[in-house]
Length: 457
Image (cartoon, rainbow, N blue to C red; front, side, top):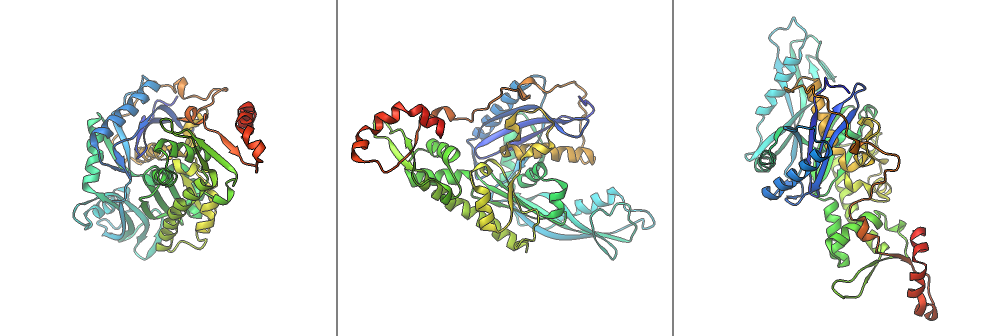
């Protein structure tokens, strides 16, 4: 165990869940997960904290679960993700004339150039969250990725500035502080997710990271090694669940379970003769729902989300196969069946699912490598980026904190997704044009062969 490195904690305040993950890099530069906790989120809508008390409760609950996974942990400072449709971005240009032109350009001068951009005029009520330099120029030399070590009179850069609503930011900070924590930094969620699922070759090839969460779909576009565009689309997994609830007349919990277990993003791929039986409410008869109808509802909303992605790519002139790395789908919503095919069909770009496992040390439990935790793991990586570039003060933690057994993979480990027990009572049946005679006996026969039927499906 490398006790020279600090323990960094990511806090992902999502619309459907709140996750806390504590990690430390090992001697191979991979993240060892030292603590992990999650809870249901109730006070957040479309990525924004609306009910502070509910959010505080949920953060505390996730923290308690994290401490339960590893009682040796002490958590004070956290990197927090931010999203919501109040997030905006703009491009600016900044230059400084150097004082000591005979010397090489230093990191201090670059930091000064970046700090100056925080004085950029932005509308009242907004606040700058992050300033990200794109390509630099030194005198007449352009498109320099890193100007440190160059000589010249004038150094400048193009910047991508991310802003958010002051009150929305205040609500996040207040919730974190009242839960007994300190916000080390606020990080735009698509940037956190990108660092978790993207490799160096993706950055060079050009990719769009599409993080489909519960309340928002976050987008980050990289081209020629540079962050070109960020956006937050206010539609995501929860909208799909609400569409199913309204369209099929079921409870929200049933809609969520159907989406996760039987949902497909392509109606053509759904079986035309497959039905889900939902138990009736308070003595009402059971309801039969067509898997194809379910897929039609999901496809309509997912196509809309992907149309927004295409629109944003056109905004920055990067549609029409210019992104050789294509689209990387991540976040909880990326686990929908046939989403890759739908994404490729709507955007015309190749797509794949992005898992955060390439930065994780071997031997962690399966759950941590799910796309659901890309943002949270990316927040830890962002913390390490600050630590390695001396951007912030870190207390080195020399205490020996081992990876707890509960977060290590065991041979017989098999995780059951939440809510699986309830849904297992529901049956999916194939209809095969039964005659009236067969129809009289079908219920009894189905019960007799229920076990075999379940095995097949």
